[in-house]
Amino acid sequence: MRSTSLALLLATACSGAIGGPGGEPDPDERPAPSPTPLVCDDGALRPGRSPLRRLTRDEYDATIRDLLGDTTAPGVRLLDDERGVILVDGRAMTPLLAEQYLVAAEDVAARATQDVASLLGCAPSAECVDTFVARFGRRAWRRPITDDERVELVAFYEEFVPEAGEREAVALLIERLLVSPHFLYRAELPPIDAAPETVVPLDGFQRATRLAYTLLGTTPDDALLDAAARGELDDAEGVRRHAERLLDDPRSEAVVQSFFHHWLELDLLENLDKDPALFPEWSSDVAERMRHETEAFVHEVLYEGDGSYATLLTAPWSMLDAELADFYGVAHDGGEGFTRTPLDPEHHAGLLTQGAFLAPRARTYETSPIHRGMFIRGSLFCGSVPPVPENIEIVAPEPDPSLTTRERLEEHRANPVCAACHVLMDPPGFAFEHFDAAGRFRETENELPIDATGELEDTELAEGDPRSFDGAAELAQLAAKSPQAHACFARQWFRFAYARSDDASDACAMQQLVTRFTAESLDVRALLVELTQTDTFLFRT
Image 1 (cartoon, one colour):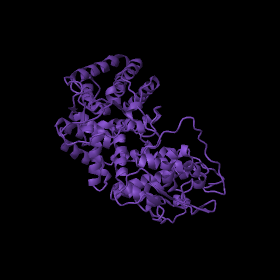
Image 2: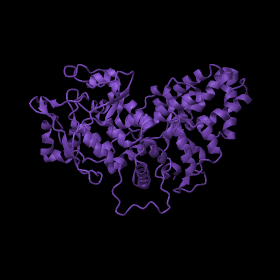
Image 3: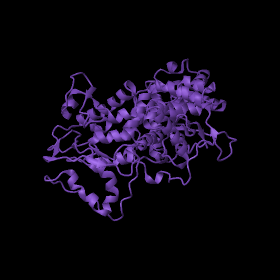
């Protein structure tokens, strides 16, 4: 059984790519500007690529939980690198990973079959297992089990009963279902008679699967599969209705939080150190509280507040508990847990002035305008940076207590070899110099005044807005109104939801997302619904 399952997994191996740090788009991945105006209203369908997708670890765990009530999170133990935005093109199936999937399935099956009769809903028998396979298999494989598949699976169970007993035979059956490519991969095979390179609609069950994993991060439930069987997902409007329904499901927040976790790279907080001589109050507990701050803030804005992208960037408040407020040096209302805490609006603004963003993008002993600026340039505005010249030696300037960090980095912009890149990265990074390496506000550096001014070069801003800013709050206000930042946020969600980079064939889908996003006052919920309305979601080639 083990060798057969491993062979099956490896035979269906696929490859993919993991997004870079911060989810910054690779300039080579973005389409070159089109020499002709974009035409999207000609009636043509443009679904782009539909690569084979393997469940992520989070999806695997959530699916096991919803199928069998197993909350042990077996996917956490899989050696599968999933940092950054998870792109399907870099996710290869290796012999070691196949072995781990089999071990996980064995563990899950052993726990699930502690009470076989309760699991099956009847006393074990061929007839009972046949009913179970049809019911459980539809949920696990996210489509109806065919007659041939059902016969084969029941025969598989019967083969092991004489030697292993009914409980072990059922466990082996569950293992087989869970190591099948139909479970581990979101296969979307087109009709067998479809001509190559033709665009075909996904069937109702494939759309149900996309809806469930895009918005809930788990397998579709019986209600959604029943809707697919009734044809309710055969048109875009039906998909929209169910998308709106799924967003009301509490499980949707886990997907939203996962997006912000990957976009902001919250995993950088793990094992984050600071120089104990300079930051004696720093600890792993502080880092963990910073992560909770950002998660609680996202929840407050998107689920208790106006749900606006602009509020995410500009809110003059955050969600703090007493300990984190004390670390930041701000007043707290004394309430239990993480509560809404007002901050100085001249300096604080949403996600970008929270410790979870600032502390990881700094050195152990000082700030790093370059790393902070790279996120603003690459992940907030989706701007490109010229490649580093060959044979250049990159050396960080030595600390100098007589200078500010900005003054020590002046050579980056004075040296023509460095300036091409640093004129784009450094200025937005300087906006955060009022926040030290641990993410706390400061008035001075080395007892010297801080210059947090700058200009956004090569960036599309709202009409009438200046390019100059003074501090993080002003930079955040510019980004909140910038058409380029709006389009970038939609692009980040596209990459996250579809698990691949966008290219020229996705230009109309991107235009559709951005148009809807801006028309709905930058409502993030409206953006998520619109993700299910594109040709990319509804069709495949």
